[in-house]
Amino acid sequence: MPGPASKRRVPVSQPGMADPHQLFDDTSSAQSRGYGAQRAPGGLGYPTASASPQSAFLGDPVSNMAMAYGSSLAAQGKELVDKNIDRFIPVTKLKYYFAVDTMYVGKKLGLLFFPYLHQDWEVQYQQDTPVAPRFDVNAPDLYIPAMAFITYVLVAGLALGTQDRFSPDLLGLQASSALAWLTLEVLAILLSLYLVTVNTDLTTIDLVAFLGYKYVGMIGGVLMGLLFGKVVYYLVLGWCCVSIFVFMIRTLRLKILAEAAAEGIPVRGARNQLRMYLTMAVAAAQPLLMYWLTFHLVR
Amino acid sequence: MAFTLYSLLQAALLCVNAIAVLHEERFLKNIGWGTDQGIGGFEEEPGIKSQLMNLIRSVRTVMRVPLIIVNSIAIILLLLFG
Image 1 (cartoon, chains in turn orange, yellow):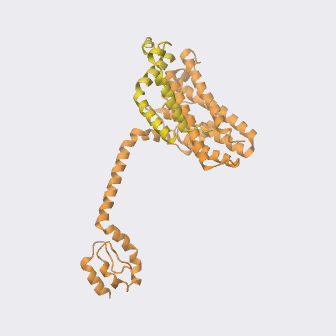
Image 2: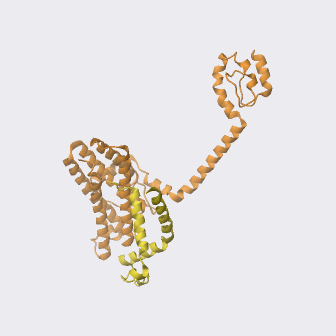
Image 3: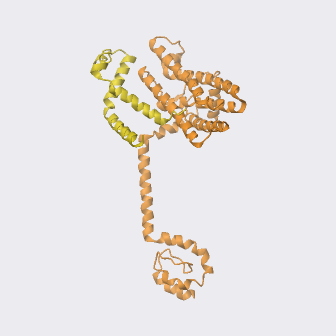
């Protein structure tokens, strides 16, 4: 019985069409006249029946062409994106800020909570470019601020949940609100740096990194407050506020007051005084924002 | 605390509109912030007042046409969606 069926099918068989033992008729090609004779060897048809519909689909020349066209379109699109992405997002510059390792993260977190014993705050340079954060604990990075921001949003959701005030859109609202404050801070500081005509090498991404470090203290305060109550929240937040204040002053002093602070001479003269006020204002804004963004989470 | 990114955008648009509306002859000259009154000093550093005047002048020059477009879009969106 398979003999006449296969003999009948051979003249019209197509490349990729394997087998005469299908259980169903394959209407993508002119095979349906072989249908009746194929019911008998049904049991033998199982292992190959599952392979044949796909091979039938892919073997068809029209779908072959469609797939080739689709994949070439996708490759062209990918090339276009790769060429133009550097215009909108400075990808290579961002990679520098994420070149961290565990030791750096550990040391930096320790520095954020206890900056009082650290002596040398200068960023090391290597032929005019700052060294990657992996090799220098003073270099700014974007890994800690990004992770801290996401953790802050999650911890805020947790805190709201313990007060029975949680709903999923509140998470988005918290994230949007914190991001809006961050943007406002960055714009205000950029505006004041422009007005005071400071020639610094403080880029915008550096500024975002420094301003993102306060989320670490905020997370610590809120978590301690959730575990142990309001008094502990105030204590931990107070400690983190003072640490961030000292951290920011010592870091920004080197960037904004470059010539004066590098030799350690006391700040003098109207121009330097203005810059010192600016540094202190930026550093003082951090504890205020830390309190403002967390006090409604701990009741 | 409903301070969202959208309200930040609205506030920014309103602020830029406010700067663009300052009239050169009737207002800025009278308080001494006109564009021809600031180019005097070429000392080593400009100082805050001349920086501000520079900023106002550049915002008014650069943002005139984009502001028309953005304001029209905002008007249409507010009319449609309230």
